[in-house]
Length: 156
Image (cartoon, rainbow, N blue to C red):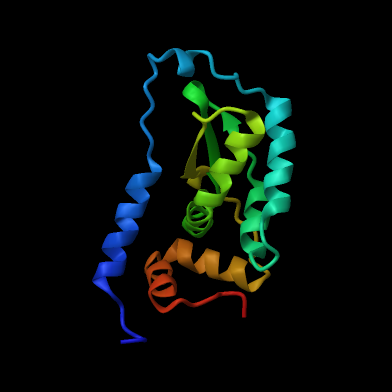
């Protein structure tokens, strides 16, 4: 049925999320000899990543501009976002994002860890429709589920 919610789709999404988690053999010579990450190269590549985002995804572009990853241990890039919606948008684009970063930095072991940082939320008055939605979703997380289930865009 076109307007119904499918449990099969939800289960397949969970399976796709598990595939994103990669386990590398950290004892291998290839891992130990991989190109190290540095801040300057990451900043340069991150600008390319932002530029590669399609124009029909302005929310994702805005998220990637405002959130710059930090280099962690073991080739992990830690990206802090402001809310769950931003996290979901970055996770949905992860399949395109990670290969570009790996290729540009010449390191196939790079992983991206996206976390919501609730401590940095500032009490600013929401202005745009997306900010209003994010503000209300922060108070009532069920709004995020409704938005996803019904495919709603808060940009209107």
